[in-house]
Amino acid sequence: MTAHYDALETRDPATREADLFARLPNVLKSAMAAPAYAERMKGLDPASVTSRAALAGLPVLRKSELPVLHKASAPFGGFVAQPPGSFARLFTSPGPIFEPEGRQDDPWRGARALYAAGFRPGDVVLNTFSYHLTPGGFIFDSSARALGCAVIPAGPGNTEQQFELIEAYRPIGYSGTPDFLKILLDAAASAGRDVSSIKRALVSGAAFPPSLQAEIKSRGIDAYQAFGTADLGLIAFETAAREGMVVNEDLIFEIVKPGTGDPVAPGDVGEIVVTSLDPHHPWIRLALGDLTAALHGTSNCGRTNMCIKGWMGRADQTTKVKGMFVRPEQVADIAKRHPALGRLRLVVSRQGETDAMTLKAETAAVSEALRAEIAATLRAVTKLGGAVELVNPGALPNDGKVIADER
Image (tube, rainbow, N blue to C red):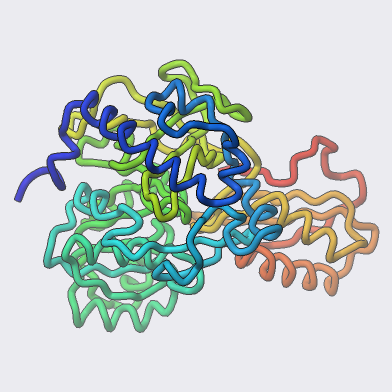
């Protein structure tokens, strides 16, 4: 078995760059068949965009804009030329943002990330990402099956039932959030259940701080991180070199100054912008709102694509909690549903080794009933549970911040 998924991962960087930009004009042409891209790139000759400098001249599409754009022109904001029925699966993520899954093998480009994490054909994988409406479960499910693995579609929760599956099928691999992996391991230890077959993991969707990494390793599991989104699938992944993350193949990855489309100087921290080369559903300069920086040189694992430091925070106030994005627009929605509230601030923190959030709300009418109503609204809007703290009017800073990530 080779150390790399295929020869594409180790080709000369100049060869990769030439291949990506030779393919880009046809992808741009396909994109411009969709009305929203046609409007944004009016007058563009796709054949002229054959370099990073030329690509940097195209407008950035901000992921934070997608909820409004999708609502105005459902379901895909006019950015997809083909009808919904041309795809394999159709999803929604908080916002709402609507995402289609292509019909090709490994549509989310995740098999490489699993391979780099030590997964191999014939492995049994316990997949605990959610399969309900959002694409997370299917991203990792389809990626593992493309690699030749058998998948247990467990989803999150129901640990007792998961123990039965683990003890029967003896999966060697785990995919899911690092938080849930710890929950699963702790619950198994308390219940005296055998989950020792799990030896490797690919985790994503939540913070994986060094303390939790050390604990998971002490349990005999070699865990690797991957960075991805519901729009693009797996974008970058950790390798055995443990030097940041390697950018996936078939993507043009840029790092730009936040709030602009201008590339940063080499090594500077900036916002991730990605162009995908899927003509059925292309993304042209999608700005994710996530920050990173490029590392110098190539990885010691032998893969020659760009190496990045990994996730370094958000360029905007949108943040990710337990694998789900939480957006300022959602906090505003909560305020609209409760006119008695003043300023709101959603504080995201860590409790133990798990993401937690507390909604602080100003009000002159403090009551347990109101607290319970707001907590129910918080869950309905974000699809996540959280605490609610009612404070006096004027107690929260007047600084425009509605989401504070304190992790």
